[in-house]
Length: 285
Ligand SMILES: [Zn+2]
Image 1 (cartoon, helix red, strand yellow):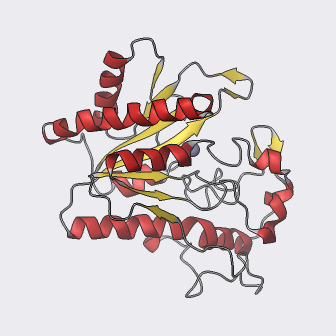
Image 2: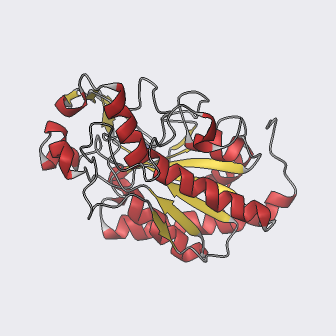
């Protein structure tokens, strides 16, 4: 299997991917059919991804039937994750790639067509605009909001591989303090799929620095082939080191918290970077 979209049934059906087959564009001419590439000339080996960077919804989807407040809550995006991503990329002089559209338009960390890709109910909230979608509407979502982001990541990784540039993928997310009534005790979680080596190094570093914190070891989620997308496809298929970092969003809800965690994570990544030569990714195929 090749990386990203090329072997899936969801490749764009027109050269631009902009038009739904019923000829009603999902994206208006002034709405971007792309993703954000922050600090494209960054020299760091870390490449930072932000799948849930934006709460924006194309105007043609009428906010999916939700209020602005609902869209700006954690169901629409990962609050704080984009600012943390840009801050970290700045401190590390790394390139970052960020999605443009809300996870409720289509989730950039779920395989298109999977049950979690376009949610009709999220954390108990009905998303009327996602009910009873036709295959063409689903394809238009993928072409407008999913593939522009992942095809960019694939092309950046292709370039870096061609240039023999070592690359370590850091996928940045935030999670809500309470989900479905359950309180989450961890300030931060380090998630992994097939390879936990980078996550373990970071957790050991952070435990030494801040023994008072509750650190989630593959919590509050795990990275799974078939249900996750970014790490399995962009890191594991290429045999790259990776880690998915989940910040509890109240930790980065104000400027002081944001500055603290941006510096902390930059310091952690810098301090483990020299070790990466001596540990090897485990069981990557
Ligand atoms: Zn997320």
